[in-house]
Length: 289
Image (cartoon, rainbow, N blue to C red; front, side, top):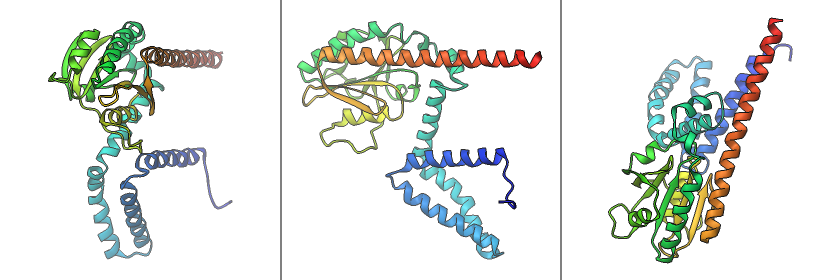
């Protein structure tokens, strides 16, 4: 190994590239993008080999294909790139050096947990009534992640959370009953919002609302409540997990549990940030001495 010079930065560089490749693989696994990426790698390796053997014509052709292919890749992998950046941004909001900045810029995060109890009861009552009448519903409760893209697809309401209003919005003849309702900051922000459908393999019994709930949970940390129009069953989804067939009591308990988990995670992030700041201050004092 004497002819190979390795520094700490080289190791960090390799680890970062491996991490990026791992996340890219997770995003495209099970999709047609895998075959496309394999073809791109073949062309890239061929270009490197052509340059190594001074094959000017071949390397020129492959180089032109690669330069134009970068633009084509952005178009082809548009959905995957958007999902990757959204996931990266969500993780930065929840933890990391930018978490404090995001919390200062978004006032709803400071009031989210204060209003969680007043949010739950009207939702539970409305879902119980809609379940009894087989009225389909899709309710999104915002957590730390941004839902601006989802809200922009619907109709802005900005109203107090009321069980009667929720039932009226999802009433079958209502013009707003299709799509999802978004609740943030202790208020009904919008209705008739469009959610992304899941790309994962889900049971055939899942309807469009359940698929939409799972799709959003794959891209954000929001809590999604679903009332099935076919069976009247109540479900709750978050972070790729879903619980189905809940009663009103179980729905309230699950929403309270998820709210407490979010509070604990936020408190843990605050403790970790405080500990890191304290450690940095102690280290600075020692260095001055």
